[in-house]
Length: 255
Ligand code: SF4
Image (cartoon, rainbow, N blue to C red; front, top):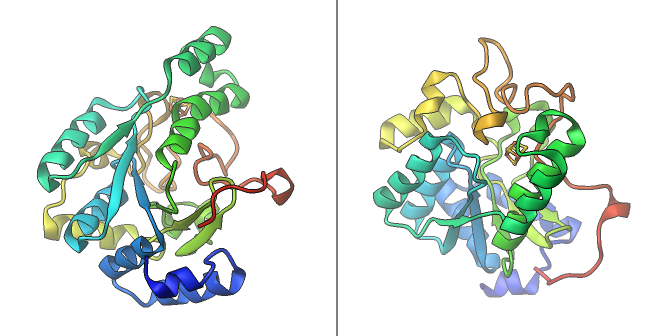
């Protein structure tokens, strides 16, 4: 960790404002290198187009960042194949973090394997055991969480900063692609021959679990195919949603 990052508490509002301004002026590789100066950094990838660009940039930048994916057990076969292809292409230890069998068994016993179609509560319960709890384990011991979310992905993400503090997971969350648009990322994929999910070409700009993702129609928002049967325009799996301040537990490891 650099001396300057040790001297500052990146959770403070002033420091976050400074860090956001600093990151905004840097190249993608330098944003990643800067993120890694704050301690152990973990990038969680869903193998989507944004995340593949980030994996490529991490490999090229030499930044010390662990690459982890949440293998929910309900991924598309194309996504599973891309995990292996990405490991081979970049020679990285792309770790898979899976849900725990007792958690899955309890969910299935209560709601049924595909019970997430029946209610928002059941859907959140499934995302909790297959994504949220594995995410907590993936971030154990990390000071920095790197994600591929962008402002242009949805209205819900329109205010995404480059850096924010996640008080639930007690990590500095860095979103190095916050200001990128889809077209410039697609151009990077072509220019650098970055391996991407073939489903993107079949109308899936955003890819999650197979039973919860459909192709979008022309003109629909990028994330319209995720949990399409739900009415809430702001639907998310919870990974990138912060609770109200009153719901945030205190204490944890300092960043
Ligand atoms: Fe379960 Fe669907 Fe959430 Fe995947 S996206 S964890 S299958 S509810």
